[in-house]
Image (cartoon, rainbow, N blue to C red; front, side, top):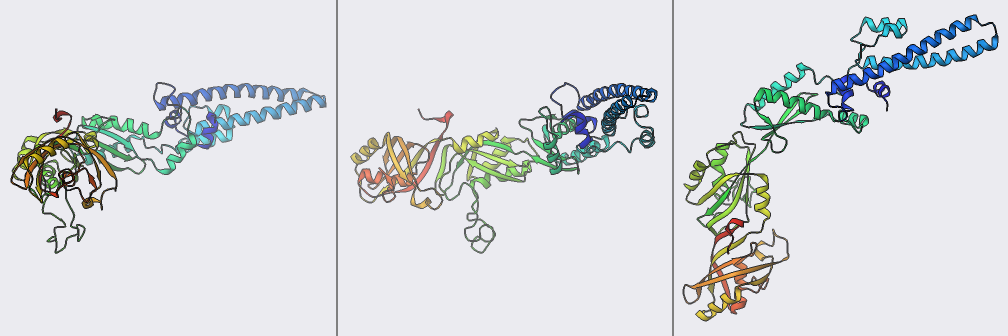
Length: 475
């Protein structure tokens, strides 16, 4: 589609016309668009003047000729020239109506048309269907002030502007698309970004902004996408009977009922709630999410170096706080203790949730029959570097895929407590269910402690001593 064909269908302003070729010249879209129109207008005007001169010459020749055949030839030539002249005049009108008012209409267009256009010059320049004047200074000022009003509630250092386009504009861009075009959202992002940098003193960050300002410049609607902050650390669970995360009441599904004393919770508190509550108050978040490197059962303590976790604070109004004070606040609970706090990033969540962590457990094993020292010693030897095939345990089969997982015990140690009871320390792969490793879970875990001892055994008590990551791996 050539210049005037585009402008015939869409009377694009200088800025929008230049945006069609944004990748070609290192200048502003406005300058590029106006320059392209001027170049086309010069080409058309010069061609028109030559054609009109030829046209006038032929008219004069026709008047002087007496030969009818020569007159007929002149008539045909005049008609052809008149058609070409008319076509060029039309093209110049498209350029004029798209905002190129420098065209000398009085000189090159028919007088009656010229007078009509010149009387109401501004009214004959058609509104741009693409930008619809969203780049007017007044419009930009109104939008930027609305943005500033919304940003006042938030602490941030880095921001990014995003533009929401109406469907009609998206469709228009598809129709106008050239290999060199940029979307109007790119230009609006760039211009509004510069305005907000000047007004806020903050910086634009395309990689990890604290806040993304989403703007529809056509209806001036604005919404903020406040990116979360991530606090990483390790936690110890010092008491049994506390789940890792908030559990809605099974009976009312969190709505509140007599069974849960109208709290909506299955358990009074959780590791998540104990840690998150003081953080939410300080950071003034809208919501939170707790991500742990695995989880321990409700009746299992998490001791030793603690379990890695990431606390995600959603839509925080405050982004920086004294983490040491927050640690002290959590540790006052006596139920949960946190350590090694630091600010994290989103990829920490993926690492903690997906990275396999080896673990060290301490289990109190109770056997149905008495057990000798030799049997305990032999058990330790058999467990070391032992591969375990473990089908999903019965107790979690309602919420876990039914499959066989292959895990390994690397080291084991044991210490007698009484005739039927002993402590068993295991260093093993993450994801190995220790209670079922001891009991056998009706044959779903093999080999098991019960199988190796040929005695029925159960796990009476269990603690996680260490969750080993790269920095805390067992030698």
